Length: 183
Image (cartoon, rainbow, N blue to C red; front, side, top):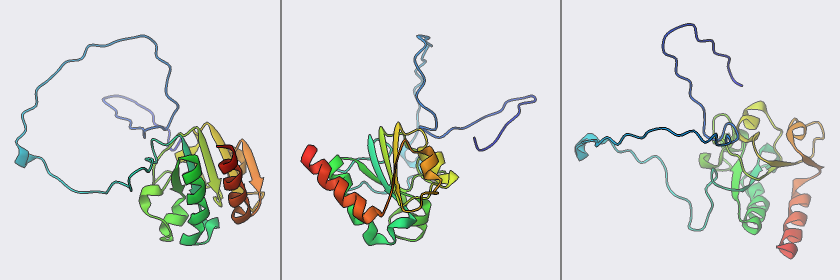
């Protein structure tokens, strides 16, 4: 939780990021929907291009069931190549920590965390990511978390179900080859 809010009186509004919590079970309750026709002139709709779609065949970060993310530990833009190789084999999406994005190694649309996207995949593989609380805020609801880091004291290991202490540049190619054999 990022803040505690107390409602004393009047109307209060709270916003939550998509996928910040696991999806709630249906209680069977229903409500009434009311259709309202909106009349808006085309000139009244402001338009701003805020991004672009990825290359054909890629999976959206927020829709992916498998995400492989890289952080400061990848060392530079070329460090994302073994991550991309694993993403391609698994059919997932590539994520990144804010440190990697801020360093200019990978575009912002890959950023996972408090100031990036909140994701909740079935499998999240964190490569060279220390696990700052801001990054954890964006991926903590992942069903299975695997951490790969040289530092056995990295905070990401406290959140991960599976941890590999080792050099990601040795671990990732071995994992990729093993998945190629089995998938």
